[in-house]
Image 1 (cartoon, helix red, strand yellow):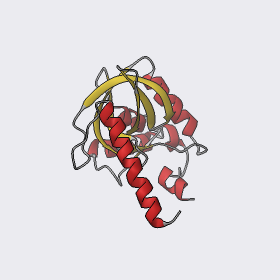
Image 2 (tube, rainbow, N blue to C red):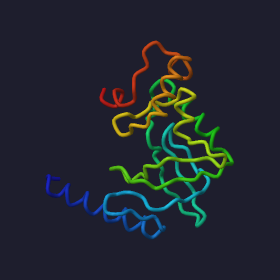
Image 3 (cartoon, rainbow, N blue to C red):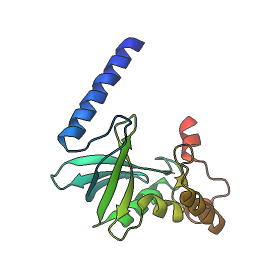
Image 4 (spheres, helix red, strand yellow):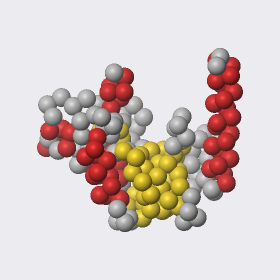
Length: 170
């Protein structure tokens, strides 16, 4: 497949994703910013920063939590991060603000439990995710990561944990 064909395929996929999201009532403005809040139950936890949200109409959307990056599959602490996200979300209603989508079609969103806690912040606080500073400049997330590091919680028990973005490059 040449470069022109790849671009055409990506454009078609983008149109299909937009059509599917529109069908399910999820809309984005021209800047890619979400304009809708939805809630549902977690149907499946994919890893420590991604899950499928089951909406009231029995459709699912894949959510990639904004501001964090959890260990990748095969990386130390990846399973514990996934398990911790499952613990946090089990039998819980999750509210998401649909912010934008990534190149894989996942909705990038902050995710809140019914009690108001934000899932990404909880993952960082427990030491099972990094603050993803490349895409988010939230000072609270940075502070929570520093606190988890100092307390040596979760992945910070390791002397020199490898960040997921470095792991992916290897």
